[in-house]
Image (cartoon, rainbow over the protein chains, first blue to last red):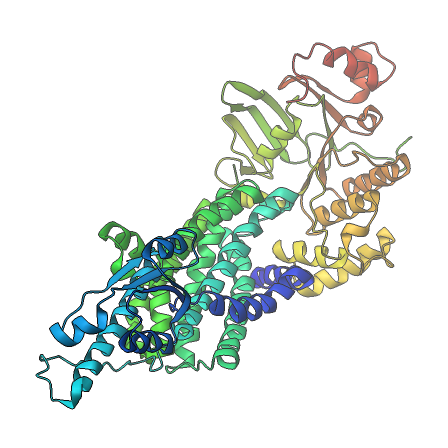
Length: 371
Length: 260
């Protein structure tokens, strides 16, 4: 235990002497968390719409102004013919074309029905799908309105099921509420994964590891000496990140802060174990960087940061379940947004605990003092 | 360049061997880096290990320090087996590698403190000894500068002092004076003699032949094998040479391997 104290003292000294690490500890959460969530907005807005109005009637005017007033669409052009509108879709100025046929108003009043033509650029699947759905919603609303307006006569309206949706845990359905905790987890993962992966291997490159290996230091002491300082850095990043979430986005964890820190503490140990394992496997920093990058890429894209794990194919869900970050990501959102209690996230504690023990044991085992 | 301190050769019968080596070999694939070497080193002896680049000196030394597993043969260091008791060996030896391997981003005092602590030297003792050490090395002004800023000569002296700090029984020096100026080399050998006087066994590899003259006994390795092992005086006599340079040249010119 006494030896461990000397090791820790040395590791902390070296870390706090490294200005880049010090700066990154604060800049990373401040800037990344301050900017990324705003840029990563997945809400679909600013859909470029081209309208071909062949009718030029009062009804079409009403429909167009209703679409414009919805706030989701930018009417980029009102082309005289479908062919011209199609050209704007081809060159990318428009995402959706709405074509209104010549007899729109007449057919609506006389026959009570009138098909419209909606053409969608489906390269960006999410934008086109959601955009078309918005457009259809606006048109359906418009449809309801004109039925009621029709000569003031009570129209026998077809039965419509009206659904009232209430949003729980994120009442304003703010995208940032979902993405900020995600980016915070991403930052912890990057800091923990990369810093530790590059550290031991750096001593291999410089040659100081040989001087360590020839001492009677225990392998676990050496690994623990590496782990603790990075763990502290991770906790600082978490603290700065939570402050940014609060000050920039008004996100105040509903659940217990203590619980959040406790879970992050266990998660960081698991992740640092991963980084140290990578470091013991690699011979130089370039290799370590490459291996760490390979895994962290998978961590980030399969963990449910951007996409819902539930909608992944079965094989991908299996992989996701095998990653420590997936469970942590879910639990962090649960604690921050839902206010989940210790009992709710207990399984995550167990999973992360097992990862922490397993990965660190592997790192210690794989670190060889005698070749 | 004569040794400053007159060093007395310890009599072979006084104690158990500090290092004992029988048929020790290391094979990398088909390559015999070290080929069945046998020797023993007495406590307090300055044992020189000579050889061209790639002769297998460093590989042999790494096996004795517990950094590398031998492929076959037997060896004990400070009475401990090199296969099973590496960690016990490590407690009793000091090691200074070819490549400078203290921490450049720590000061001399911090380096001393760290390595002392890792070897289990008590806090109080560390403080006392580092004060003495800084004084005897003349490092007072530099004690709080980062090691990276020191000239190579001082770095090497510091590395040697760190290797001796926990009072090991045996110290392994792998080409300790490589790239160092003649004055510093001389000072370095003074330090080696001083340590040997205190009873520390010195195992040193070098390819400076004048340094070989300072050793009690010298081993010349060629292509992984020991070609000669004796005192410098006997070697010169046996090969009818005036100096160790000629002895070495005679033996080493048959070498098949150069840089390995």
